[in-house]
Image 1 (tube, rainbow, N blue to C red):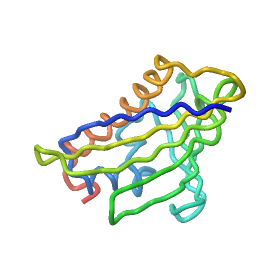
Image 2: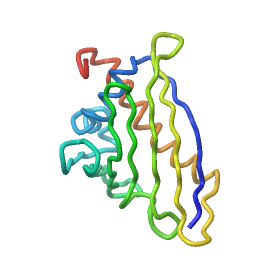
Image 3: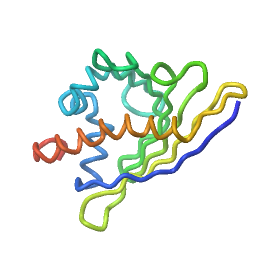
Length: 159
């Protein structure tokens, strides 16, 4: 097994605390409303803390039916959240799991920056290319931007 790491940042006009809440604590309510073209539902097994499993069911016609995340840490005070994709989605012949470490910080313009570290755990000698990594990021970014737009048009959500 090999590990490929990738750092990236996403800026947003939404405050760090509000964006963190929408993408973690309230994701089961927010994702299907903000991105119905992508997310059908989110099911949570557990209390949302470490060890909990979140299953995201995708809309019809997408390449994946679902993905399961195992929550590893959830620190609302420091606006950090880490989890691993443990089933479904892009996992299969090349990937055993994908881990994410996310931290939300204040942006220079009053919004926020989500700093992420992704770790792709490959199976055997398989190679996961930068193009494949960027494809995964683009898929996530579409949902992220939909959540951001939803929060902008619904100022009372996740306050």
